[in-house]
Amino acid sequence: MSTFYDKIRNKEIAPIGLGTWNMGDDLRKQDDEIQALRHGLDLGISIIDTAEMYGNGRSEKVVGEAIKGRREEVYLVSKVLPSNANFDGTIRACERSLSFLQTDYLDLYLLHWQGRYPFQETIDAMEELKNQQKIKAWGVSNMDVSEMQEILGSTSGSSCETNQVLYNLSRRGIEYDLKPFHDQQKIVTMAYSPIEQGRILTNKTLQGIADKHQVSAAQIALAWVLSHQNVVPIPKSASANRVEENFNSLKIELDQEDVEKLDLAFPPPTRKVSLEMI
Ligand code: NDP
Image (cartoon, rainbow, N blue to C red; front, side, top):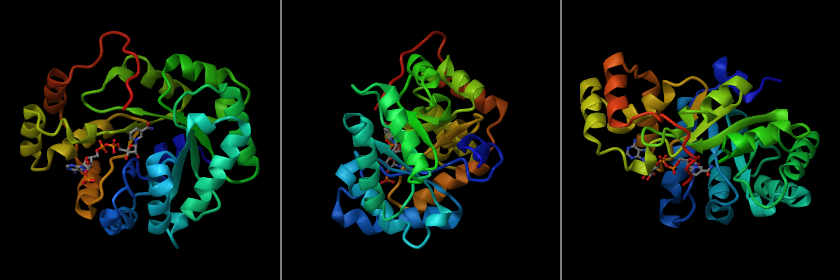
């Protein structure tokens, strides 16, 4: 079976996903959220990212509604809370997520961030969930290089397929060491908050480049993330139009001049920066 890395590299699935943080929190928005996710699937997006943490399962329930009858089109990702990530807790959390998502398997299951339980315990549970066919693969989130080294050095640790981290124009710290480490280990970098939750979109340089390409600032921010090999941004939108706008960033090619301007406005790291989290 091909790994997440292979699927992205061989273009088996689109290298952009659908975030779902805050979905399900406001009942009045729920229809739009479901529509937005379904529109994403219509466009050919497969990856949907959720977590048990998001609204205490409410996001997973929205995703469950959205993918009903379309499970095979989806590359479904959820996450276990560190406070649940001992052996039995991880198994139970996964089963709860499966029931909220109305499915019998996850494509990828992540440890949301490091907690008090040893990595080995969570990894053993992940491998057990694989044996039980409740998950197809596992990974982690919010891990810096030293944690990744510990994970990969654990028994079965080399089965880790992704590290989902904060990455966007204004948060480039991972380029110094974590991203090269992922590439060397064939671990996919999933980029969360790829448009910095909207905060970078008023930047003048970004807007200037967007005007030149006759696209939006969000699309340039996403095109920049997408211009890096082995990186999968997972922008969240509760609007079908914005999901389509975000998807269309796959068609944008930034030229050398754009990249240089962006490097001046959002400089790359020149030394180790501890991994930031949102
Ligand atoms: P994003 O950078 O994806 O920004 C989402 C915000 O931007 C929303 O307010 C959305 O509003 C708005 N937006 C989306 N598209 C556009 C657009 N084209 N133009 C203008 N505004 C737009 O932030 P998130 O923090 O949501 O990150 C994405 C996903 O990553 C999360 O939803 C979650 O799945 C995951 N994540 C994982 C974390 C982890 O610890 N592993 C931490 C944080 C996020 P609207 O919905 O109204 O369109």
